Amino acid sequence: MTIENDLAAICGSDFASDDPAVLGSYLQDTSFTPPGRAECVAFPKGSEEVQEIIRYASQRRLPVVPRSSKISFHGAGIPAKGGIILDLSRMNRVLEVDPAGKRVKLEAGASWGQVTPELAKHGLMVCPPLLPHRDKSVVTSAMQREPMLIPKSEYSEMLLTAEVVLASGEALRTGTAMGQGMKGQCFPDALVPGTRLFMGAQGTLGIITWAILKAEHRPAKDKLFFIPFERLEDVPECVYRIQRRMLGSECLVLNRLNLATILAESPGEIEKLSAGLPAWTVLLCLSGFHRLPEEKIAYEEEALWEITRKLGLKPDVSVTGCGGELIPRLRQPWPDETYWKDHYRGGWAEVFFYDTLDKAPRYLAAMTEVTSRHGYAAGDIGVYLQPVERARILFYRFTFYTDPEDKRQREMVKEIFVDSSQRAMAMGALFTTPYGSWADMVYRRAPAYAGVLKTVKDALDPDHILNPGKLCF
Image (cartoon, rainbow, N blue to C red; front, side, top):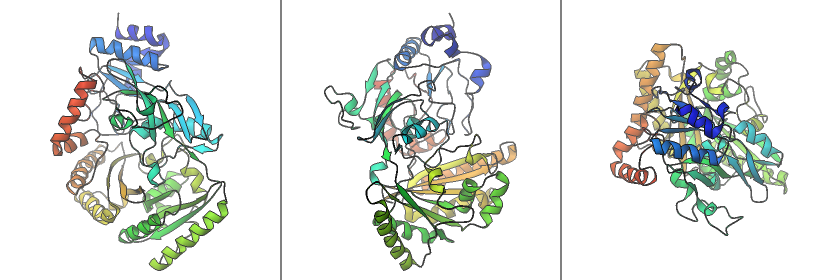
């Protein structure tokens, strides 16, 4: 009996394959993670089949690499030591929608393209990160701690409770999902272990089969403002004052290249559109819900004008090529087959981390210095800054666009990726999701923490079958 036959007995003959062509689609992604080939891929339909597959793999000590979809940008789903790809894309149901409790229960394979319109029928949304890929799993976005566009403190983590299949094949429910007699309650850390133990773990501690996430009511009315800047040094004070007054919902900062890439209807328009945009733009959406929405927007707009007037700024309701119609787009996944980051050069690599907003000019100077040393044009760097928890902290993302067919340029961007990552870490940046080569950089700086993680790994996965070769495992 082959591995394929054994897995077919669990999932069905159509849902297990060792075909090289099928396995080739999991070989690599857009990151610099080395390619890795699995021995077989299985497509379970439910938690019971996941448990059976994990028990089978555990008995034979076969590595298991979970994938919620074929969308992979950072190498977390690339097999490092062969084994079985566990593709959860068939587990894509919206299991429960609770408008009163503002939460939704999703299977791990449910994508942004599926979940967003389904929740819209109930007047709800899972607050998205910046334009996620339509085929990316919503649960994976939450597990990877992708920051939401709304910087309210209560939105900094969307994941509440979940079911996790451990390396033994046992199903563990986190938070209040574990407890008997706690029906209707939904807190991530009411019982130990909490949900946060598995966040950012890249499937190395357990495999999520379903999760309950926070949802939010869709606003009844919105008014989007664009606040232009020519110097990044002037942005922090404006954002700090806006968030100190708790104004608006979505709030983010984009440089001209990223904003143009999002707004352009075709790749050929990006450079022309970029030339007409301000160097930096703060996007702030004022939202009113079902109780007095116009009045809420009016008093927040008055406060916004008070702030900007004191700073000598002039907010506008539009920029070149766009106005208020951008807000519905920001609450959806990217609709096109070609992802927005692929429009400009066809490929990209990015460095992302957390630090405080006041250090933004220093990080920009550091990234510009690194790229110029390698001969990369500073104008080809896309920058996205996302305030988190009312700008208590800031998510930084520097995107280095590249032509994937140009091997020399691709190699140059790889060197930039490594050098800029090391530079950011040396400046105090916090990398909360250490993918690929970041893992060694991060855990080398925190050996005691890495030791604790290894102890947890040994307890939950003593044979190290779950996504081996990732993090410090």
